[in-house]
Image (cartoon, rainbow, N blue to C red; front, side, top):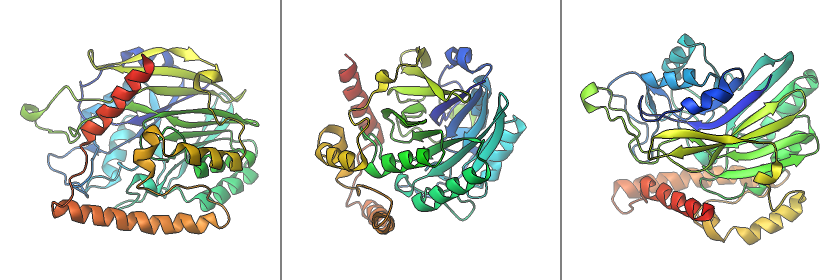
Length: 378
């Protein structure tokens, strides 16, 4: 048996995409994805923050999860708490279909057996990606030092368990992982984690083999909207069937837990046919090779500093803090950055409400990155 992990799943309307091509790889396997937004069952549910993109799904979209045999969903992301309703409504919909979840403060991980081997998957979300709590619910936040010690303690008590970390981290559209995230992932391998999987950046950031473990820095997207058309109009007369979805590269990673090897499944969204196309598999790590593979932590920090003002990195890293480590004195900077980003977001909302600032269109931003990627693939 194996485990197949996909990235961000947020389909606003039933019928906006066709994913039958995935059934050939999901029929007899444990499948996991990240539920990037709650299920909405009522006609009017207000968003907590009207000055950001808010993601959610129509109730019928649970059928997409069933069609590709998704067994477990991570709630550890920056959109699951977008709307003023409790997570229990989403949990109830999933429970009726036999789909379990993890990644909340109360339920950070989930355990199950895969071909006779016990597996544990932890979900956590970094505060730099957005909201991690509201008055109803709290998601398992990626506190680097605390989570590191929790994983080490769990591994000591359960030495035979195969541990996968499924982390929502990094900046959107960044080409490379933050130095602190790379260091943290490799240190997690050192204490017994088998695989670290990243989601959120929308980019496929590559795969690094380290000692006996594997790090997939970002899976890219799975199914995610590109436009502001993210709030379902639940009445039939207002329902829009053809949603605008991101057609950036994306991969699924299939993990053989017995041999600790992976297969990379290449996926592509064809906007002309509104179909998620499965383009085959490979076990060749060179397909996703990294220019910094085998760099020490110090070497990667130095290399990253030379990259962060080039190309797509520039638009995302200049405004937000760069994290070079989470350990030792860098941990203080991590907590200071939380205060800085909280203030930054508060000021941004104020400026938008006063009409002193008009943020770039999410549609335009994602379109630009799709065009850049198409140029690279030509």
